Image 1: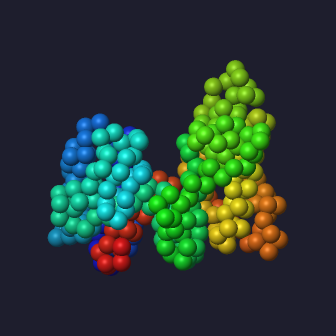
Image 2 (image 1 turned 90 degrees about the horizontal axis):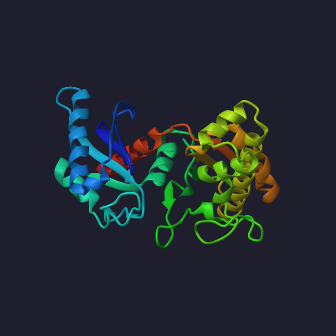
Image 3 (image 1 turned 30 degrees about the vertical axis):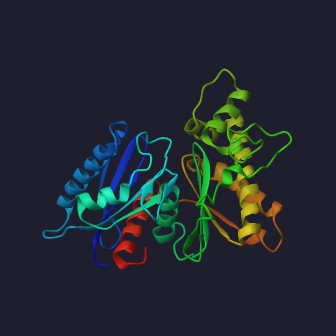
Length: 310
């Protein structure tokens, strides 16, 4: 499709936009504070302003043909509504898709941010040419987007993919914020990595990113914490592989930046918790697109809307 589109990643604190060319390259970026506390109309106005500014980077006579936007959930991708995203105050039951479409005069698609990043990886990143895959995002929390035969698996109420709350250690595991105990998230989310490191070194205050740096320097505690996180990821991936019969698992999010300190223990662990006919086929790889994944996935959805397939 010979069209220019814009992908938007709407977050609680920042909003990132990318102008995407007909050959699916991000030609220009914009990043602005979201200012969600000012309300939906204000945020929509600022997005429209940035889209108009991005159009200046396009060839003469060209206009943006469609826009895709992703946001934290819960949201309804069919009606285009933000339902009650906890980190976007004043955005409860907001018809965001319609507001943007009315303001821009172009088709608009709305999707959950993790699912948009998964679509970006499927179309342009680590999942190219693979029709079934799982994108696992590991950051402040842990979640997943499941793609089967090119389609997102959503579940009955659009809650499919809460892999962070697969139980690994129900008897002796840490209490999780969800009310359960021993969830995957308590082993590998950023805040839990920090807690686990500080139990070994109570005198040190470190962030998840610093733990990755310490691991690269050979710090034994950092290596141990990331190894435990990777093993938990491996157990979760093995469980998903047994249930879904999907072979490719793409790992994104801030914790995934630790690279093989995190991913290699997962690769070693997954076969131990799955059938011998399943384990050798499991592939665990890092996401390739970084923060651009959600923008490119949103742009991909914008193209689907133009073609009438979204």
